[in-house]
Image (cartoon, rainbow, N blue to C red; front, side, top):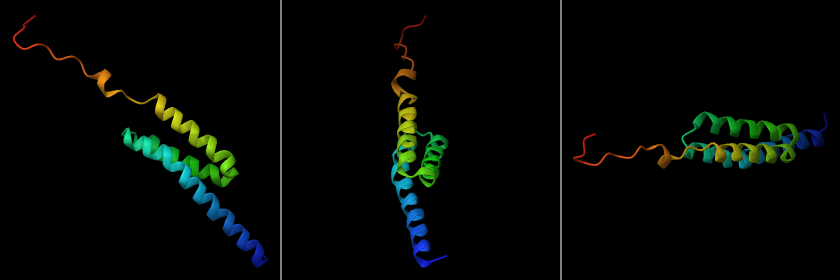
Length: 91
């Protein structure tokens, strides 16, 4: 293998890793903020893996899809809290 080919291969791998990590941080942080660690780390891993397959062409749509899924399925903390009964009133 020529040195030019090795350099090209290293550049492609490092570039794919960089793009995957940069794009994967978006759904990772969103998922960790929502305390959905499994989905957050899965989104990061799939985004990095997809950047190795087709680069930013595949990694960007994967990142967008995971971000939208995390945004749509987020839990609303205020909607789940039942109202407190008034003091002194007994049913």
